[in-house]
Picture (tube, rainbow, N blue to C red):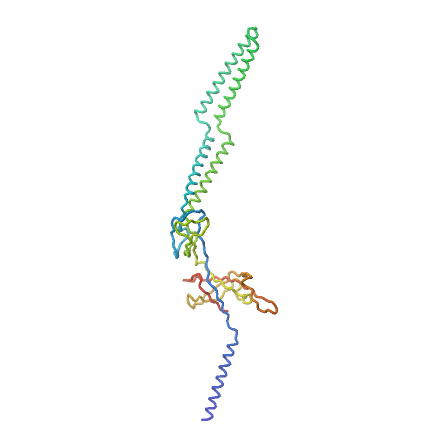
Length: 325
């Protein structure tokens, strides 16, 4: 009986020693490193190309929007005035172009022809008058001064006829080709101005170019919205990724295109596969960490971005991600 007790005590002591040895063994084994990251997602700012006051705000924080959905409108009386000016200028330029292409009116051509015929008849009359005066001069009845005066009137009548004839021909031909091209180009330029202003007017109703969820509303109806200032921001959780800050001596586990398992506590303990798609060094101000001051060796910190291999229901920006390696 005494021997049995001694064996039992020795056995218990051996078990205790073995257990303590195992615990010491586990204590000195390398512990898996746990890395904590955070979920980020693509954000978009929705703004207007034209300044003005917010007219209607058609969404609110938390709403889901799709591509092409109306977000807000801008009130801009200045744009309406500019559009009226541009249209008026285009109408005037188009009218001038039509006039250059169509030439003078029928009545103007007829009037020019009548002026030419009148000048032609006057030139013939002065020619006959000069011939009579010249005959009288040859007979010695009239002085040479009188003959010269009539001759000058005859020549002036001929020039008047030539001028009237050229004006009549110009009226028939219409504007020069260069004038027509200039008028047409001016009409196209003013049409372009109208199109530009109309494009700005169309931008007073701002639609979403992306699908996502409204994450912030920065301006309210009646407030002034400067050009390009974000009125609302939306977040696309279909384009989400995890961001980790990894010291360079542990970076080999996170090579580009490598995969690893991680857990998102907010969604439970289910293991989720992530794939590394981007690795970049962080700024010096945030990454210097002395590892051996005697040798002066420092570690750099790298930012690792990894996307989930499959979509994760219920994922939200800002959730923690825990990876062990």
